Each structure stands twice: as structure tokens, then as C-alpha cells.
View (cartoon, rainbow, N blue to C red):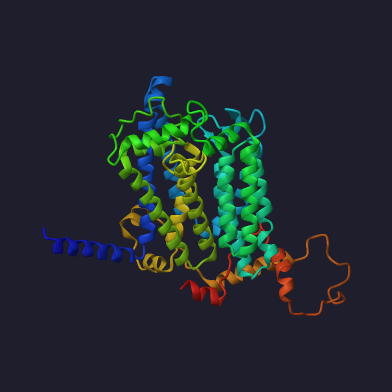
Length: 482
């Protein structure tokens, strides 16, 4: 084959891919494909990395893999349910679910309810399986925070309304997770809160101030406990104590180096023979590098890069401000967690214990992350072009197979009416507190035009966190979104 022919074929393939990306449901199919590939890769690598230790502990090389496969099946069901949830219901349930997740964080700290493993209370034993409330609260904070900020932005709310009550609630959640203790999840929650404030329109100066304060708090927490300070000391002194605090990080680098370009082959890892602790969990990326080589690592990075592109594409194409905030924040959280995990495996960051989303072993994390991917896929079906195609009968084979409902058409008029009803309910007098005067003799307030300074306070009363409403885009914002 000549060089000219090969270049023409490559150009033709690129043109076909670009044409495919222009299809209405391309974002939806990309999200489903990425979630499926990462989950399947994770199951394969968990089986390979955990087989030796699982056999040594219980006599079966498949025990941890079966548990992970069970949670993958639960996650697939959650993914499907997330595809079917109407956006109105998702917004209505956002605050109650967030409150329930916070209650779960409190319950896990109570002896007898929370299970204590290696000095930390992070799980609630439900009999058949354990649940980690700190994983659930990531999703509930994303959804409720997006709903709250979308409602405030549509009202042109002031700075106070952007910060209240989101920031205090986020700090409360971080405090409860720190008490477990669980610094890695606290960092993930910090990423969620920062992403919400960034995409929610917080001024740059204040955003930088909050980010620096959060970074200082993370450093203080990292140095406050013995095992966390050991990790920091190991990161800044990689040559010290190679058989102690630096053992795990050095073994991870040896595994990556042993894999080379092509890898040793699937299932042929040496590090999993008790040389690399937590090889199936925190350091599974090192096993991928050892068995699948540089190409396997590049595949994982490429999938997450494609996920970033897809998530931001959905956010930019969405007309609904709630979906824009939700998708952009979820994409930032999942990608940030993946980069932190890969960063400490390759030695660029101190070890934090954050898992590689959908790949590392961990049932609660896998199921909850798949649920979040389902919400993102649901948002992809609400892109304007996708809505038009689905209502025109262009469902595609996958949507027809799953029997997914048609997405609702975003209507600014209907959203405005819903917001007006919410404001009317907020201003209505409560029972038992009616004025003693008859209606004709009650003093009527003089109508006055609201000043820009009073908008923030009134929006706080009209759009309360526990009283969800559907936001409305003003004309200028809708024009930009198109």
C-alpha cells in the first residue's frame, strides 16, 4: 500500500468519525461506551490482581472478583434507573437524598452501626453487603448543588445566595468524612464543591481565596495524623526507608517499569504475589502497566480523556442550566479523582488512597460511579438535537432495546410558571399566623420595584433548598447556549 493511499484512508476514517460525532445521540453513545469499557477493564484487572491474595485468604481465587461483579451488576441497574429518572423528579429528590446521605455519615460514626476497619469507620453493614455513605454523598452533593445554583443563577442571585447554604453544607459533609477518618474522600468532596462554585459563577478572586484555604486545610490534615504524615514524608523523601513508608510507592514504580511498552501479559504480574499491597484497589493502575504495558495505561488515559471531552460537550450543548452545572461538575469530580490516583501511582503526587473510578476494587464506589454515569447519559439525551431526534422516532437500537422514555422538552415558559408557583408558596402566610383584621382593613404594602441589592435576599426566600423548582433561562443565557 502506498503512502498516498494510506493517508487517504486515514483522512476518510477521520472524516467518518467527525460525521459520527455530529449525530444527535453521539454523546449518549460515548458515555455508555466509556462506562462499559472501563467497567469491563476493571473487572478483568481486579480478577487478575486479587486472585493470588484471595486464594491465600479463602481458598478461592474468585472471591473478590465475584463481589466486584455483583456490585457491577447493581451499578448496571442503577445506571438504567438513572436513565429513566425524569429531571423534575431528580431535582425534587435532590435535597431529601442529600439529607439522608448526611444522616448516613452521622450513623457510620456510631459504634455498633458503623463497621470499624483498620481504625476507620466508613461502612455500614447491611448483611448482604456493606455501604459506604461517603461515596453516596458525592453524588447527592453534585445533584443538589447543581439544582441549588441553577435556581439561584436564573434569579440573578447575589454572592451570598451562591455561597449559602451550599458552602456550609459542603464543609459539614467534609468535616463528617474527616472524622471517620477518610482524607481521600474529603479531597474528592472538595473537588466537587470547588467545581460547583466555579461553574456556578463564583467570582475568580473569591474562588482563588476559597481554593487556597482548602489547600492549606488539606495540608494541615495531611500532617495531623501519623499515617498521613508518613505518606507526606515518604513523598518528599523517596529514598528514605525503602522497606517501610516508601515500600508501596517504590513497588508501584517497579511494576510500571517491569511492564515496558507491551506488558508482561494479562495475568502475568509479579507484583500481585504479595509484593505490592492493595494492588487490586489503590494501585491497580500499576498492575495495568505491568500486565498491559504502556499501551494499556495509554488506553485508560485515553478513555478518561474521551470522557472529559464528552462530559464538557454535553454541558456546553445543554440548554438547561441545571444539566450544565450537573454534567460539568460530575465530569470534573470523576476525572480529578482518576488523575489523583494515577498521579500517586506514578510518583507525581503523595499517596492519598483515592480509587481509580470504575477500575479499582470497591463495591460502593463502583455502583455509585455507574449511577453518576447514568445521570450524565440521561443529560446527554436531553441535548436539544437529541430531544428532537428522539421525538421524531430516531431512537436507535440501544434506546429501543432499553425502552427508555422520551426526554422532556425544556420549556422556559413552563420553568417560569413553576418558579412563580414556588415563590407564591414561599410568600403565602402560614396557617395560624393570619392577621386579626379583615381583608378589607388590612394594610396593603405599597408596590415598589426591587432594587438590585434586594434580589439576593428575596431569592433566598423564594427558592429554598428544600423547595425545588425548575429554573428558567433568561434570553441572553439561552442565546449563548445555542
